[in-house]
Length: 112
Image 1 (cartoon, one colour):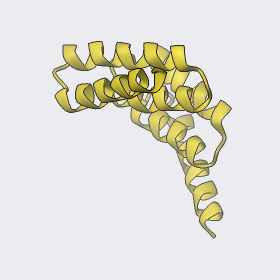
Image 2 (cartoon, rainbow, N blue to C red; image 1 turned 30 degrees about the vertical axis):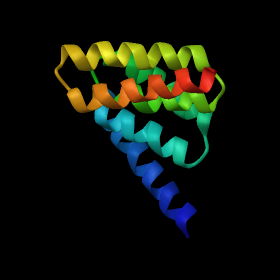
Image 3 (cartoon, one colour; image 1 turned 180 degrees about the vertical axis):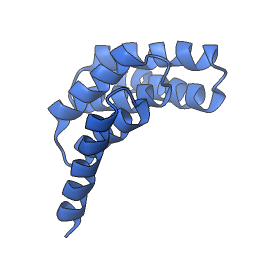
């Protein structure tokens, strides 16, 4: 049942994306749905495309970095988190900045 709901949600998001491929929120939601369905390569591709398309979309950085971590790409994740800190600082999004800084600190503790 839950898989059917997720698949319908994915189909709907893909439809929205086809209607407006420049909508950053739809791209983000599509990537997040791919993660929930454990379709990680597809999620990574959508996050990367969103990053190229709209690097000021602050919500991207935490989730993109976490996916990279999950996929064993630690240096890329660190780079994404660091860039996200810079973007969120520039945009005065202090909540996002705190989350990204926390993710970076967790990485540092994990490296010990």
